[in-house]
Length: 366
Image 1 (cartoon, one colour):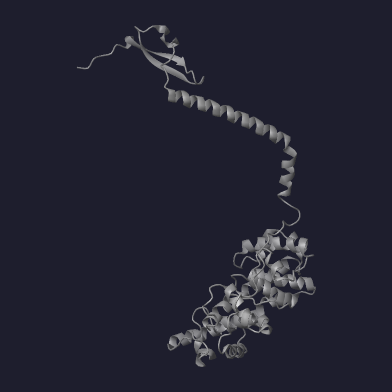
Image 2 (image 1 turned 60 degrees about the horizontal axis):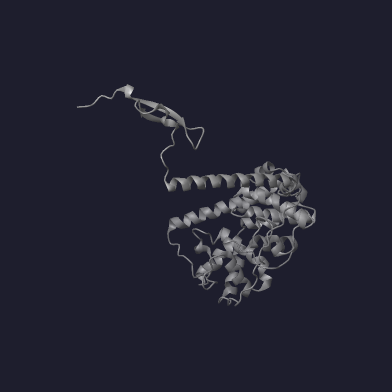
């Protein structure tokens, strides 16, 4: 049987907490208990609670003292902090990070592949039959509309910076559009003064155009501050510019300064030389391909091999569906990767592709 509790027998007594003035404690007491019982000391705390409270108080004191000392130091050093903030946005370009010098030779030269000269000459003959996009819209064509030598070199550099992950047709159109946006000629000051929106709108069709906009702006500041508003004449200096890699650097030296310092290896050169088995073992990166080729290919051929193989890769040795039936390397046994194209439908598709490429090149040339 439930026992009813008389409400008059108990009541709640309020008292402030001894550890925080903002906390009020309520205790249930019997009427028989003295009213003054809340004035008595609270129950005895354990040693663990005492140690915890003591540690908390010591921590609070330490935090308050450290905050006071830090605020005092901040007032004493207010001026140096302001000066450091100004240096965060320099008027001049920030010093580039020191890159390691580009490797130029192998410890042990790669042997020249057998019959490479026959294959090279055969590719050269085949290239005479086709006009590839690189022939009319390559990076060396960017300077043809410039009169000043500095502008010619700068336009070549900008064209190479835009060409990454982009077809020659798109790059060529972007170079022309950006020239118009800059007032009809390429200058370092023009690139610096142009806002990001102007450059981005002109190059919006190329791959990674947002990133390349920043690279072009940053490179222009570096050219002004460190290279007398001109394109550098060494590979390491060119590679120190944002957005410029070894391939661009070697091609820029060859096209802008007529300096033959190495081979510009892109995806076409990397793919085709591996298809020809010129590398043993096969190379995995364009840099490995470059070092191998430079170790045995005669130096007088270094400036032309990129243009030769890029055009060959754009017209015959395509990345997908290479036109092996029209390649003399396959019939002469000079290409170990040659494929047999027996299907008539495949032949028709290849012929259509050929006609499309010719029409695009001719319309672009006009």
